[in-house]
Each structure stands twice: as structure tokens, then as C-alpha cells.
Length: 168
Image (cartoon, rainbow, N blue to C red):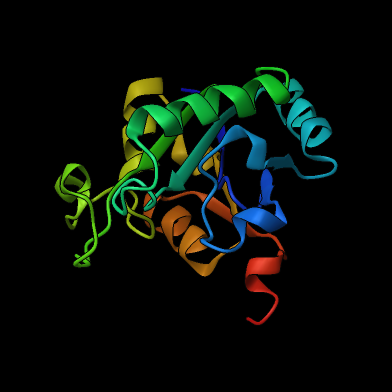
């Protein structure tokens, strides 16, 4: 079994450009900004034998702002910018609340699920698919829900300070 570092995406690996802040979601690769020092930190973790796995809630899919394929394309782009060091991306496209202005094609993602953080579904799926030892793994995030996800999955956790949690 391998050890892993699970990473939240927004606020941990990438930041929102000012034009993205209006709606709060990254929906285009032009909006991607890799945070300073991330590539070097990921290279160091990789050299220490950790599998690197991004787990991220992406409710913009459930809101009809981006497609599943669009998120996957963004993840390929982000990984290219990071030197293809990320082993796998997992994302939750769901959101349990239905808003009246959601496009018809997005309504299928408006469900309660077991993959939306703080539930541990994405980490558990990764552990099963990649033969990971969760007790030797870490979850790094910038929100309380990231820490709760890691704890629920049996990982050690680190919470980073970010613009999203400055008020916490």
C-alpha cells in the first residue's frame, strides 16, 4: 500500500483571478493561477514517495456553469502547469440544493451524495482504486470541510491559511 497526499484544489493549488471572483468558480483555463511555491512543494512530496491526489468539490457543474468534461479539461491543464506531477484528480460535481434557474442539463447533479466534502467518498474511492494506506496519508486543505474530510477518511490533516479562511 502506498501513502498519499490529498490536496484541495482552489486555495491550495490554485487561486481565483479577480475576474473569476464575481461568481466564485473557475470555469476556464484562463482563470487558473498556480499559487507560488506549489510546484516545488509538490515535487518535494513526490520525491518523498507520496502519491499526489487532488480532491475537490465542483458545484459549478450542478449550477450549469461548466460541464464534467470542462472540469476534466481544466484538471489536465492544471496538471500540465504543474509538470504532470498529480497522479489523479477526483471531483464532486454535485450540490444538494436546487435553484430555480439551474439549466435542465445540470439538474441531474443536484443530489445529495457521498463524495461531496466533508464526506470522505472521494478519498475512499481513491484509496480503493490506487491501493492507498490512509493512515499514512495526509489531507491538505484550506477549509474546515477539507480537514473534516481527511479525518473522516482516517488521514492526518493540515489546514492552510488562505483568502477563503482568513475570517475563520
